[in-house]
Length: 282
Image (tube, rainbow, N blue to C red; front, side):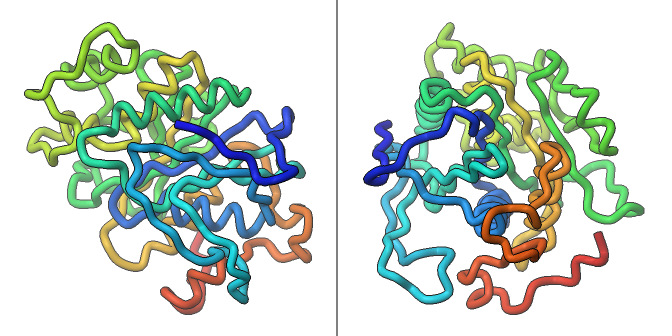
């Protein structure tokens, strides 16, 4: 995986926290990164060339009028006012290469000086066993702070650790060993098939591979997750973006060039989803 800088651009040392999506149902992680990049007026600093991501190309994703600036599968943005780096992924990983992709991404994060990576992703609502909608949309988390995935700081926001995570369960343990390079990948234990067992299902998702590989690289990792179904998932995207801002104590309205608005909706959203949802429900 090679990183290509935009001409005259570079990474800033103070932007040591990296936020990125893990592709899953409803593309909520990608939408949340879009929302953060648009609101913070983040500047594109380069892109990643990876053989493990399907090629795609499009027009400028954030400008109200297309300028002919190509949008590529893996792009890095920086918001220096928020000391934040954002990585957007716009196409899926080639089937069967998720672990290799995660290892390469962990190498990139490490060599580019990141010390904390926040992974945003969604989970299939149909798999949610302990449903509680009394407080509306909920955030679940998984953290490298402790072996069991708990993090006292995350708990202060009322978030709950992903209950299905068990580091001693065979698939999670195998994935951890793969990330650390102590075993080679066994074709009889795939990570990208929809598993009947819930523990197998969660460990088969992209966020699990990213979590394991980033952790194995010695980086602090926090996964912020929400349940959803296919459809218009703007509310879930707002919810995860809000969670990032709470977690990092950021105020989007103070971002450079925001013009005082709290959230700036990416123009591409308006053509697909129409008006934004009523955020007073949150």
